[in-house]
Length: 568
Image (cartoon, rainbow, N blue to C red; front, side, top):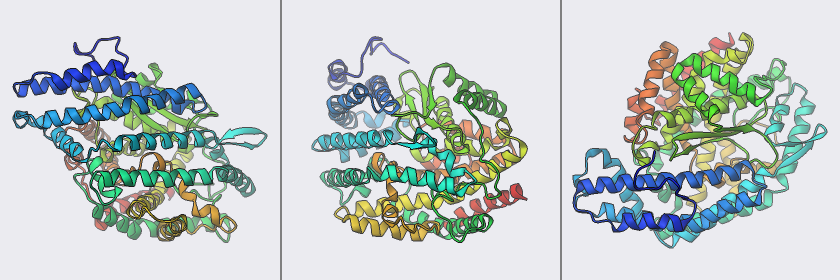
């Protein structure tokens, strides 16, 4: 949505084009709270244009990491535009928050002003060049991981494409595929460790420049985590250790017994999701052959759930807002990005025909639905919810789509997919706690050595991880944290998945009783965007925000009961 403030031909990827509008906002005469509201609206419009320009450059780079022109265009934006935007944002924030009429603004601006005041408190001009270096290192990480290919089964394959072999019923195939992947990853282990070393030091310096003891304290403020604390995260880790870890071990022991092996090896089970080869020797779940089949099937799934969701998903297809196939040079992983000016979401993933791919597609579609529901909110700050609730949108969609998996599977295979998903939730929560606890230690001890890092990582694996036998791969086990891209590119973005999973399980509880009611709760809460604090966003859907063992136990308990019903 545009306004008279911005011309339609505005190129927001160049600072010389942005500067005129930025100066207007910084120098405009302001006499009353109404003037402030107009100022906020115009700044939001400018932010929409700039955000979309940067997002499009980022999308282009991740879709083709081997294209030097796309990589350089993104880096030019990071190096030449982003620093000036940071300076402008701080100057604008100070002007707005310091204006005598700011306290006369309507209550809709309360959360926004609170966040602005936090941002003013942590901004330091000397951190701008550090943040540029941080972004460069993150881009290098994307380039390195996007270039990873292996020769296997007679052809070159991306690492996402290798996932299908880890579900092969022939253990020798799984082992050879796993060895091929880790052999390729080991080629870059040293550089990835160097990148992480550099990122830790940069992030620690950013924090100390801003007056914090460590990056943990800084990032909680930077992420506007007002509604839970460092101690809440530590309590959450303890709750997961008490509730989820024993159940994970039980699931893995059943797998070991069914496979008839003395120990589970890394090629027998995914340590992140708990998934792997079918324990009854059935062929891997294969929901689709082509991306077109994936898109068509998901369209049917969402239309069966509600016409509204179906229309939203079909809009993404019709607007070419999906890049789903895995290919050489494409960055790994999956994400949903908001194009703020056009109010259209974009979904990126690497599809290889697995059940995990289908789950990722539904997950990212949940993010897109969240974006669509909040797209009518006027201001960019109002449309971008906290990550802890953004992930409720995606994770609950994974669970609420269970009754529609017949679009991809026979009745028997649909039951397998549901059971795998529920087991995966149990096994993911300890992995989430591992990654979050690892980051807490990393940034509380920024001067640690690599040996100390490996020792702490292995200790966390003993606390939260499966009893997988890594004999012969001990050094690789010490750096197995490198497989988690969040550690490199989005620090401290991981506990949100665990918090949101608890919210998603509560929505799933509603859905099991009344699907229409659950989807109504979903739409109502997602439409709020970022207009309410986190506990109120949870409350709008009838969900509780909690970290204690009793809360976790009640949700995982019902999940385990449902798992028993499916497997009976």
